[in-house]
Length: 79
Image 1 (cartoon, rainbow, N blue to C red):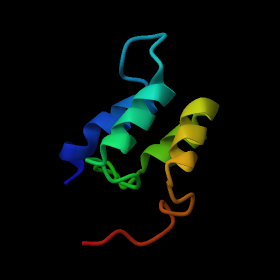
Image 2: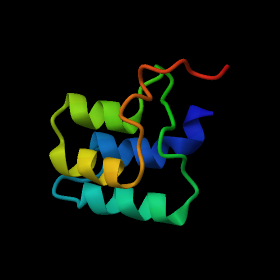
Image 3: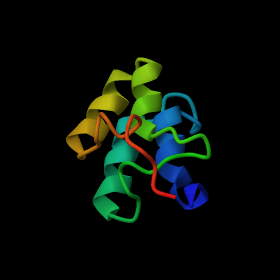
Image 4: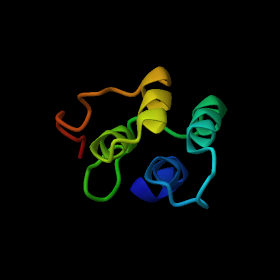
């Protein structure tokens, strides 16, 4: 579930140390292919939705370039 995808969420949310290359971490996680780009947290929020809501341009761009669906938050979540 959501717990296994936390590294991507942490990179998008900025949980890592201040000054980290969050966009670089996002790109690396996506390149590794182990984390679905549109994974959701427990509230159904995607990393892209969070990054965009908080005006994190570099993180949003990295997620979009990685193939994130900008409408995933609006789509029905599989149960």
